[in-house]
Length: 147
Image (cartoon, rainbow, N blue to C red; front, side, top):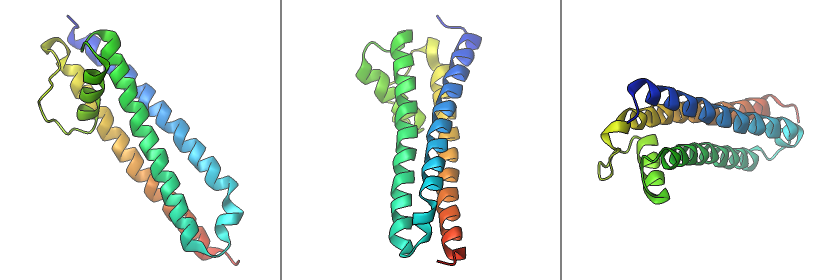
């Protein structure tokens, strides 16, 4: 049986790991946009803006996918669920706060399921901000570019 504080500690560590992974992906995206800056500023702008959007969304998908896998592997390692499929399904369902309710965490691990949802809220907020900021940055610079 995992105590309340043990679950909060484990959940906090997993949230921090997830946020660090997201930070690495964001810094990588930012470096790619900076590296392509001159090319992005030359016309035609809209196809390049669409390419930046697609790349940013792929980065966002990577953030979510890696975070869900972190949680799923933790559930499996902790013995919360017996198999990988159950662990992955519960992690995805909790992370996205979908909450079908067809698979529940054992009572001893309920708090960890809530921590997964908290991580999902944080990541989805960060992802929304990142996508909007990257597009806004590129578009604003395209409009200001003398090229």
